[in-house]
Image 1 (cartoon, rainbow, N blue to C red):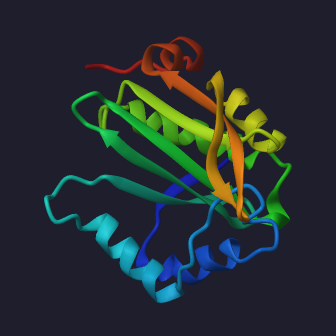
Image 2: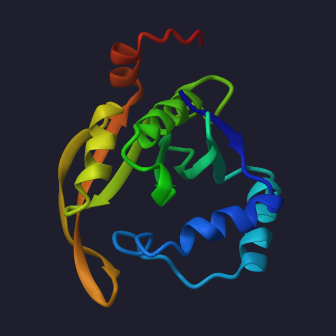
Length: 179
């Protein structure tokens, strides 16, 4: 249903268009950013100083074209865990693209070609029911509420925490990974 392709600096205007949509900041603490600063960030993500990629950003592609963005942050290589964040353009929401993108990203995160993680985490504002459902449909398990975790629109917002282990993903995805 979707494919992921690595975001490149030329994608900055597209990503910025999604970031400035009226609903984009409702559940996300988006910091001020220009198209040029985003372009530089995409270059830095692809060319880390120490050679170890810490963040991989992807464009979510579907039949209508690009529909959103998703990223994987490597939180700890030593402990084998990362976190995911995503956003789907307003015109494309409610069609299952977030769930499909999460599933595709988990195949990267847990796969031998990717960072080969053991755990991936995500958060969603408690009131962001659509995002929470996407996480659950993708196999993430609810792990609790982090009260007042982030400041969004000047207010502290409670967030639901989700996680998935490689073993859980393997058991439910039907995927076999050779070591």
